[in-house]
Length: 291
Image (cartoon, rainbow, N blue to C red; front, side):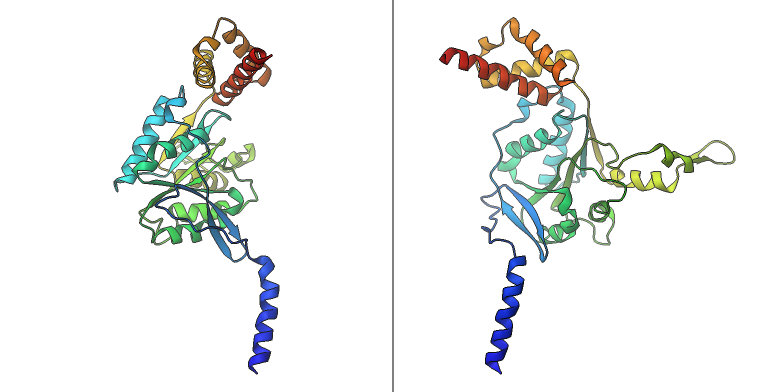
């Protein structure tokens, strides 16, 4: 009987093993400051990762108010004070994701730990948050480039964690998300057809479709908007990165003209565009010097 049981167990393991993820090193939050959450068929796991770069908040130009508010909110959280979940929304390439990375580099020594969750792994978010509840560290769970389509139910897991369960999120976890959409979900003209005025004509009541879409973003207490750069802010950002990646003399009389032309070809001015121009400008100059 024991032999038969052992054989059955071995056969079961052979069938289950392909579903198991590759073993990864355990996260040590005294050493590791960032990790990725990877969901799998039997739950999920945390994979430690080093910080992507040494980007600092000083490298982000033209978003001073957003830096100040997010830094204050996160510092309050790290000190055990009341703090809000944060939604960073706005135009592409305007510094939303970069600000979260720079925040980690700034506050890691003060105890901040960052966990990134891909949108496709949001179904496992409640499990992750429950695991973090018993950790001594303080975590920002970060969802980058977050948006949902009309038929996507993954947002329900996020709504539940933010403010939809009896227990709520643990005291040592905040949710930060970035998105190009203010309400995270697509908005259609047909959604407004259910809106109506009260009989006295004084109040506007939205339909169920609009209320459902607004309810998710409303769960973030801190909204930070990121808008396209004007020409002055764009050129200031270009100059910062040219001098950071190269030398002060690389920003000469030709550089602003080339930076403006670069933005025109890219179809807009943004922090990302400024950084890409600086890579192109400084790289071309160093290459010419070597030639």
